[in-house]
Length: 398
Image (cartoon, rainbow, N blue to C red):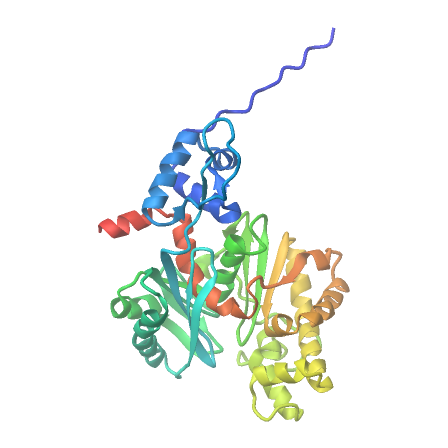
């Protein structure tokens, strides 16, 4: 006689757990407005724990109960949804690039509320002095009375967020710059330091296309670097040095690199290299990437050819990352594909010739468009809030 099948009931929700408030906040971030019963089911927390954490998060101004349109009465207790409150708090950020500084304010969903740009001076000391001098006015103009939770300081290259130090940015020529220490007393805000590749990877995980699974983020600008996330957790490596791909070889390239070699990825495809080629070929009068992109957008054949050439040179690195990591998604933040999205097919075709991975499904441009650097600047602050929202309570009581 066959054994009877016995249905095993699902385990009951757990009463609570140390990261319960963060789980409730992330559920509202992913799918809000969301009923508490749905949050309980998705997080595994008991209804009582969800209600308690919801009350704590509302008291901190991180979630709220949006008003629902009137509807016919339903049996049982009313379902009051929760959503992320984007009207109370902001994250400030500054991205340090070769041509300029980008100041930004972003809300708790990573949406850019305001941004301004300023020229970048040459030395670290001068740049840090400018950030401290310009930030208060930027906040007065745009914060609108909302609480500023902290300042994200983001740049390319090797950045150690634990010590708050820019270890090396070869494009800037900076080494061992104590970003957090220099700005902490000047701004009186919590300072969160991060590389722009990891910040944008975190932004994709929180607010963009990479909210589930494994992710690779490739940044191509004046700095070329990568970030890798497995199961939503960023791979950092020793002293947070993971993701350095600037010196990957580009087949056929003879471009000299400051390292002493030739054909390195960053030296071959950087914004500066592209702009200098455009001047040498008579496409634009000055070595500015924006002029090249504008010429390409206007249909200049030589400018379009140069943009396509850049994507073909990036393709081997993309294929290598796909094969090595086998991610669920590879996100590329790069100017040509952001401003001329119709050229993304060129990259797809070149990568597809080098890998058996389903390239068109896996390789996408940034979720944040031309505002990617502004999003990157604020994301380290937002990531800290979404990871440990109750730290705000501790900070307020300190």
